[in-house]
Structure formats: structure tokens, C-alpha cells
Image 1 (cartoon, rainbow, N blue to C red):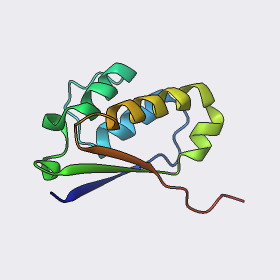
Image 2: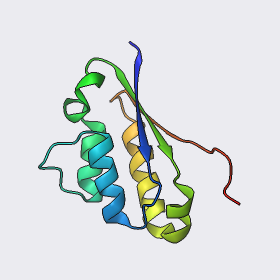
Image 3: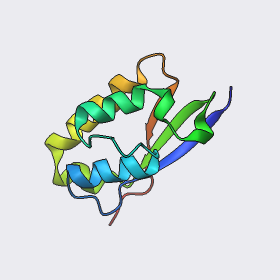
Image 4: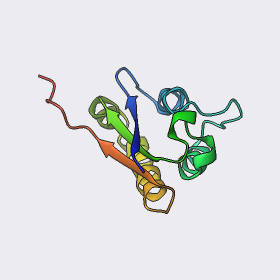
Length: 105
């Protein structure tokens, strides 16, 4: 199995609603996606709702430009990290990686 890579770019995200919108778009989540933490966790653990190109593959989600959101909303970011960690810890074939990149001046 090869990985299917999805980039979750959080540039400009300032709140949970923005994060959920970016997740829905990047992961091509269905219209019924609830845009809450439980719905995100369920979607990340369920390969049947992953992008079609990820079918029968492992999914690698690379989160970019997350630091400004993490600094602006540390409590929300802590929950997001928990969701990413728990979802990728199962047998779903999901890996979530935080891109460090270069720090902003």
C-alpha cells in the first residue's frame, strides 16, 4: 500500500470553525460532516469517508501553517492535537504530520 497525501493548510485559520471548514475541504468530507470535534475524530478514523483517491491506501495528512492558530487558540489546538493523535493511533491507516517549516519572523 502506498500513501495518499493530503495537505491541510491552516494559513489564515483563527478559530475552530475555520479549522473544521479547512478539514472538510482538504479531506473532501461529506456534506453531513458535523464540524465538531467528535465528527472530525469519527471522519479521520473512517476510511470510507476519506478522499476517493485514498481508497485502499494509507492516508497521510500534512498539517501546514498551524502555528498561528495554535498560538491564537491554544485550548482549541490542544483538542485538535488530541483528535489527530487518537485518530492516527488506531488501525485506520491514518498518519497526521505537523509540518514545521521555517518560523515566521
